[in-house]
Image 1 (cartoon, helix red, strand yellow):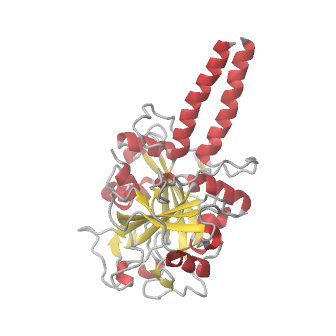
Image 2 (tube, rainbow over the protein chains, first blue to last red):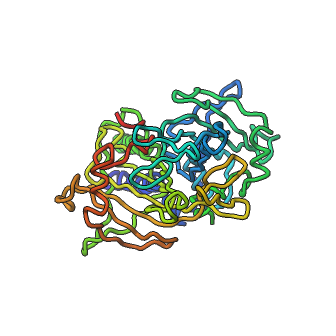
Amino acid sequence: MFQSKSRVAGVLMSIGAVTAALALNDPTPAIAQDREIVRASFNEDGSVSQPENWRTWIFVGAPLTPNALNGGEAAFPEYHNVYIEPSAFEHWRRTGEWADGTQFAKELVLLRQADDCEPDPDNGSCAQTSGQGFFQGEFAGLELKVKDATRFADEPGNWAYFSFGHQPEPYAETATAFPADACNACHEANAADDFVFTQYYPVLRAAKP
Amino acid sequence: MFQSKSRVAGVLMSIGAVTAALALNDPTPAIAQDREIVRASFNEDGSVSQPENWRTWIFVGAPLTPNALNGGEAAFPEYHNVYIEPSAFEHWRRTGEWADGTQFAKELVLLRQADDCEPDPDNGSCAQTSGQGFFQGEFAGLELKVKDATRFADEPGNWAYFSFGHQPEPYAETATAFPADACNACHEANAADDFVFTQYYPVLRAAKP
């Protein structure tokens, strides 16, 4: 009986440690082993399913290209909330590399407009108690970027890009990959770290070993 | 022996479910019971210690008040990356209320400046491949907001506000609470949900039951 209690306690302690590491994404080097990378869910027709819980992934940065500064039609309107899937973030934090299976989500958010927040037509900002600036309004789209050396063996960097729609929720349930040149060419030419725009993502720069 | 194996298996299964919920912040209503709220770490002198791993908390929104739009001196320069501690987010998602112990972190980030990103003096934006806009540069400060009915019984809403400095890292290790009027008066008058500016945080609006 003592032995079985002890085993239960041992299980509890080890699972507890894993739980703490998973929940807090503990940055200490004590996590020596790779967690399994959580992969995107692909379907038989090659499409990818909408990820689950991307808003609880690790936020890395929020570029903002207001429509007002881009002739009324920004390519990505307007805030781009960018997240990395947590197990891929762990891998990056430990190795400075994007694991096979790494997922980034980019959710688009329009600027807030309200009676107390009339946008300046020159730049889209409005005045709030914290100052003149920009504030997130309504969700307006979801994109996903996946690195997979098997599925996307022919894509530069093995990255593929998907859109679940530039529209309010609900977003599409599945998405097919963009043609390579639509996204990857720009990422290849301009992104600082293997097709990822870490120059805009201070959280990733700070975590890089 | 069967019984003890069965107990171990039972522990594994139940802990496994908790682990999954903690790791993914599973939004399903299957999480019936409250997780214990993870509380801020206070010291004997009443100061609070810098939180751990706030960049892995749940991102809720990123207001931006560029210095260029605020006479060169925004009150909060410039991006404000706002996070809620995950157990408090779970509580909010289930109840629409801020649990006692809720923590919000606000990290300040300056606009990116680089040879390829010369700020427009009128608004602080620059031109990048995704368009004319704003991009996160270097970290510039850390603040914390804590709800605690015991420690801050006399504060409106039981909220207290702390700054670990408006400066590059390293931030201060500890911080003492601001006088109530310094922050809370503005939050009380203008914030949409019990002293929290959910009007700027689409992630919180979407998660509210």
